[in-house]
Image (cartoon, rainbow, N blue to C red; front, top):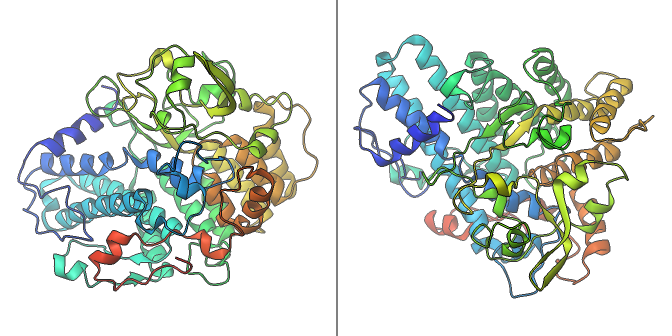
Length: 507
């Protein structure tokens, strides 16, 4: 029964049940859906919206993790497609990663818009409870993808219902504040109507705790630096008290806990990511995967490592990307104190594959060769998007940003995280910079670091200092400016809009 709804999502994409073409994206095409006629139609459509999550971790490990100071992703064997992202190239307008992010997010939004429209027109075929739950899940997912777009691109076209193609083409990029208004409305509705937990085959669907956690992060991001008015994700709204209230609700719910027992993993931190401990009490929201060659496995564990690493652990070369290693940066590795168990869980520092000797550090947090699937895109391990440790540290951030609470509360939280990592000397004071470094160590390889830097207004200063210190090959463009907070609008979207979209500054 494990992760059955994802299998149903696959079926929804392969069968015709009177529903619309679920693969049609809104920016290049509109929707003229056939009415849903049964509960099964709605269930398949909902599962299809979940299926759009499958490639999201792959993108975030490039768009966020590789973009940050956690990875020094320069190649020695020619330009890799991800290297311009790492190097802040101004030529990434046509790069496949921003383009895929934009189009995939809008495909997901299209599916949710059609589903929500059909619920309004034909939801009477569902019981009231099922209709409310379906709507809440769809609204969470729509908010999730719009938040993804805002954080990377700033202003984006706001499409909240199915439209004809000619109508979609006429929608301009919408002010960030207006996009946030929809995101917040969707998440508030989701939080009010989603259950706290699921059982059986429904485990893995979004919950009220996930909606409140994401909504808190949305408020915090909206409160972030404006970077001089670039029309990015930060609007300086000072919503930290509101975010803190939501985080406290998640904490006091009793639904989640910090994993402190090692279980079958070498330590408690490793047990959070164990293949035999999925959907544990620390997980608030994750992307579910199934291996076995059914087309629903994960590819993200292979994204940052290469064939030689898999050869070194004795599983052959079919699990690597065949690409170059994207190693952890020196500053990230050096930030771990002696005795911090997270370093050995997150990285393999140096390895040998035949005659090839690698001295750099590979991200291995998500790799268990003994429990691998059938190929590099068939890993069974779920990707945790948000976990309880994140909620706790976000609470500490709200406190330091003046949202309420006390310094003592923030210190207790950080020392709790550090204690699990094996660090026995507690901190006696805490600054926002110290907190961000703790988050960097805790969430290495989870696609969070870039957003942390942007949200707290530290992207320009931290990244420029890191480039000066770590760019040994002198490949990263410098100095970075506020314009580098945002990715460019992809070339294909400029063309699809007949160049009516304004490009982000600096590109």
